[in-house]
Image (tube, rainbow, N blue to C red; front, side, top):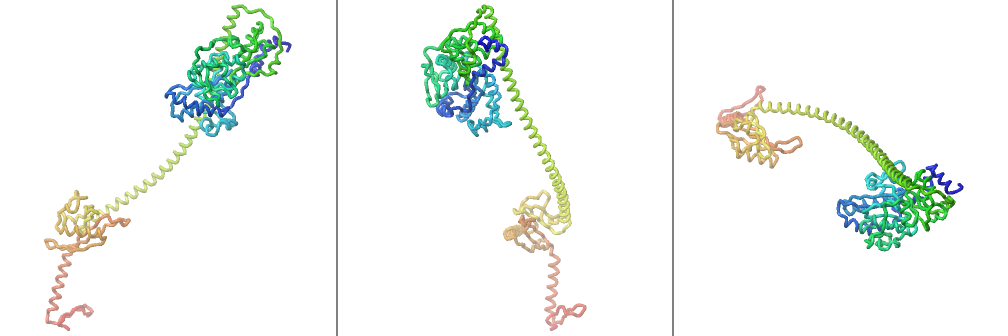
Length: 556
């Protein structure tokens, strides 16, 4: 192109060219836990003190200006969460990440990074804070919620405030001392008293003596100190005002023109990335301001003063009349309106991105619910199968119960029909069951079940019965004893062990057999034999076949 004026007209006519120009000034070099040694120093020397003095439920605030695509901000979030948990502190962690590059901020909000981050993040943190999706690593929601991304020019826009930690690494190296001093004053203002500032290993705060003191040289970590005289800051200044105050060229959204002032119109290039085509056209008609030694930088997406950028626009004088006061007022109002509109659009885009992420999480949750539903369906089928088995077992039990009822009825009828008095005693000699005939010898009623045998009145010798029962329980052998009652009835008392199906002794069984007639017959036989032996007559007994059965001595 012929000159600066023609290039400015081209910028006004082609918004895409404006974006390309702005992107050409930005540097987006970053990674997770960049400069690992500095992070180790932060974790071992600085965070323990911060966490020790922070009461529970308080806010722990950190700011990462020039955050680029968000790796530094998420690194800070992971380290604060880990150390707060290790110290068992319940803190409200808030991390603000700002940059001038909207595209880089969009990447940070999406929080999706390539698999190559594994070497710097580490396996343990990947499992804790990331989930693998489509060949990438997505930061989990619990960590994303701690980080707020915002578009901001650290040189000209008001800073955040009340920060415990500010991590501004490798930004000052792109600035001249005058602009460095302004940025350090802004960072000093942003920190709480005693707050900490993290700089890159090649950066220094020596130009601002009295604002910071170095507390960890190995990690280039400084602490805010109270200055006797607060620095003069103009947070509401435009990019032009901020640049003039610092003696350097500041940009809302782009990098510095550095030592390009001798070759180009400073303000036109400085505001190129944030100006609309109409802004650019109006500014092209203004006379170029005269400055020396100007430089500027943006956030981690930092400014680059490359020879190609300096030679891209040849010097061309611009001649135009200064705008009137009314035009300046309208232009100022339009610029303010555009800034507000741009902020609103960014908020909407951020909200839309969060909604997309929430939708993805909802879809993932829905898939998990579907999987759970399938598992429940499988469990239901298994329960139905088990229920069918239980029904079959229940039917078998009912059949067994019916058999037991039948056997019990048969046993009851047997006991009721027998004329033999019988007692069933447990191992403590309490009554378990008895036959109706037993009431002839014992004064028993149905309520006597489970009562000790010794509590029951008996017509026989109770002491002898108890003694025989205990002997059976001890020796496991049957005892038979004849017992005669007062009325002359003679019983054969048989006491035997009560054995279960598994051959367990569960008590004793006592039966009483009436042998009175047998005893009388035996007595008659004995008397007849005595008569035969005493008779002087010969007596021989034989059967019908003539076989001799018995004889007396006289027949010999």
